[in-house]
Figure 1: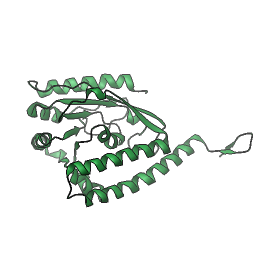
Figure 2 (figure 1 turned 180 degrees about the vertical axis):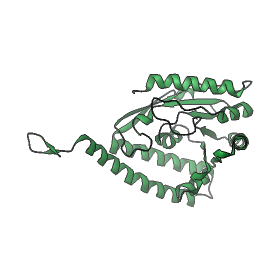
Figure 3 (figure 1 turned 90 degrees about the vertical axis):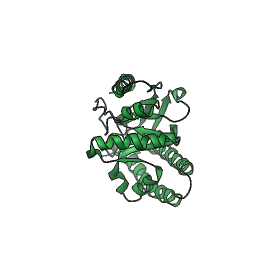
Figure 4 (figure 1 turned 60 degrees about the vertical axis):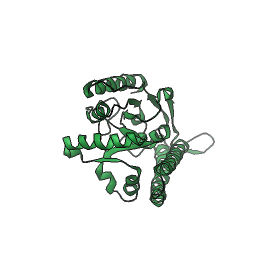
Amino acid sequence: MKRREDNGEAILPGKAILFARSFAFWIVFLVSIVLWSLVILFMAPFSFETRSKLLVLWSRFTNWWLLKTCKLGYEIQGTENIPEGSFIILSKHQSTWETIALQIFFPRTVWVAKRELLWLPFFGWAFATMEPIALDRGAGRRAVEQLVRDGTTRLKRGRCVVIFPEGTRTAPGTVGRYRIGGAVLAEQSAYPVVPIAHNAGEYWPRREFIKKPGTIRVRIGPTIQSQGKPAQEILAETQHWIEETMKEISTC
């Protein structure tokens, strides 16, 4: 039921407003995915750098539209920690938001993802042109070997490799099991690790339609050098920094 102010104007209930805003966001977002995918496929003969710039433009548009419709923005700290050259990004994974936004901060990114994503119409076909490292997560040791082999190749090409060590999205306030694959890549390639913490899941929850207004907090951590360190130590340093930072930025 609608409430009314003294002037007689109807005011939608809070949940209805959030639903309407989220609906507007989703409609344009889904259409933009199809259009962007077609553009990227058309640009497949061009360089990775050209396609990457188009991806950044789409990411910026999506975040602008998210702010306009759902009143959800972000603030970032730690950009001074971004090193020159290639590196490995190990990020907290709570939401779809970071899969869209990280390339704004790191334009030369390639993603480690489950191979099934490549089978999705439009998005998966376009994603395949962005040099992803598509893994069969049921392959165990062979998947780690592929990650090291393909990840090292991408790093030598000047890319930054994005990995979610928890593997899947975790609910705010919870900690998933940190997997060793990204740290093994760092150990064997000797490229540094940049840890990322954020609380996007508090505003764009996994498997939920409604987006909540607010400001997502993103923190880029100090570079973790990998030369001479075993994978277990690299992973422990990364997890410690991410989870301690999550305690500082989380609101739940």
